[in-house]
Image (cartoon, rainbow, N blue to C red; front, side):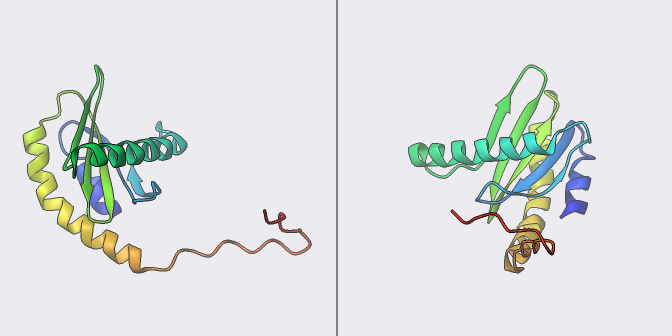
Amino acid sequence: MQTLLNQMNTLPGIVGCLIYNPEGRILTQAFPPAFDPGHLAEAAGILLNGTLGLEVATGPVSMLDFRYRGARIIVRPIKGAALLLACSPQANLQFLNISLGVAIPKIEKLVAHQALLPEPAAPEPAAGVAAPPAG
């Protein structure tokens, strides 16, 4: 998946991109180091909740396009996840959609494969360190 995101970043006007699952967890991201991973995760959660609310009100969402003075954010729901693209305001949406038409089926296959893999186990507490109380 990382390779596909890195390829997406080579498109004109793309600053960075990420894929998040239906729980809002980032599966992978390709953003410059200046972007705080915590803020990216927070944005994914906000967009997840907003998209769910929008779908209740309007039906299925095929794309969200947020335009700002200095940036543009595109969100494309895909099977099992969502793709977020941070773009410059001048990004060509038609060209981007053509490129996404090629990339999204590949990403969906990778997301489906990743969903079949078991979640990584939580690390065991170090010897002599008490686990936090449940509650």
